[in-house]
Image 1 (tube, rainbow, N blue to C red):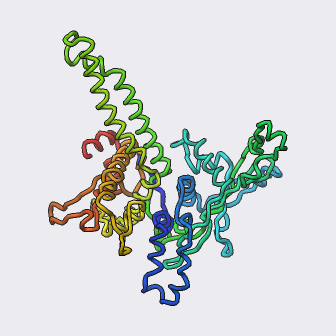
Image 2 (tube, rainbow, N blue to C red):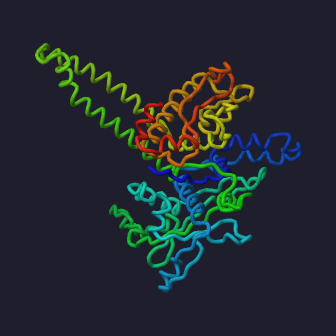
Image 3 (cartoon, one colour):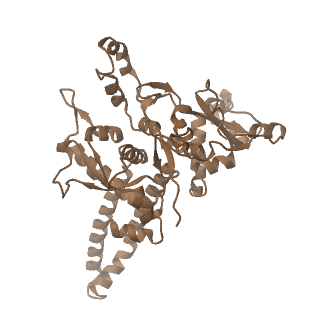
Length: 442
């Protein structure tokens, strides 16, 4: 198996995805950054909505594709879709427009539906194309709200990270949901008639995307070595789809496995105990008991996995990659509260004194119902090859350093996670029999 090229993911974008509203407020209230007068002036920021700091799965899927596009087509050209559709003229333009325009805040790319599929799911996740296209259409119909995004080392700006327009075969574009359906008369409504969306009558032939320059420029701009890319981490290609695909397959396997056990356990019990040694009543009793025990165990595991959010898994990886010094096999999280607030904000609470706390029950939930299941899912992703190209793979939690005796956990407000790093990851996990070797190691 060949080494898969990872995707350069800007640190600014990863930071935006792992910064909560409360962390933003805490950052603003640092005395070293603001005077008392300035703090009074920015006190209104507490009124900011949480939507300013939250991203959804649709946006994550598009971010992954746009980063790959910026990395691979920053100096590429393609046919001008709009001119070709309108006048039948073949003219080649930049894939990523507005790179040289200092007055434009957003890059722009216009893609045909075929190009859109190649950018956002490729052949690797072709089965997810209908889902991906639905995500893109939802972002077009209901555009992302403004986000508080990094503009510099200490500056933030409220702006939309991306804006999508759909291009129809007649050259028009519609974004708002309210414009998609024709109006009904009172008589039609009383008769229960439902409006027919206009977009069902027209074919979508492409999309136009505008995406915020400061977030994606680090992939395009030249580094000190005169090569494209600076200030980035590395993710597997189509990372969000890889997470979704693995979780779906695991849940399907548990569901199918539960049904299979119910169908075959009675025969297995009879064979194990020797056919004819038990009467039908005893055999049924033992079979039902075993079924109940196994089913409960699988359902508990199923429910745990159902409680795992793909976005939480994504934030977990992004946070680790941002704190990876590219040395050794461990990533030590020096501030457990900051980590939990960035990835699992619901587990951090405030006590009577206004101090942030992770109570014992929440810490247990973090370990047993968040991190351990996620490590299992990441292992399955690695076996399947969905982590190929990534910077790291979180492998296991370590609560004590056997060499130094240093301990990690809630009482020390830190955490240590053993990871596979890119240096040995490719030599071990992207060669033949990689799945066998992974199982041996883990």
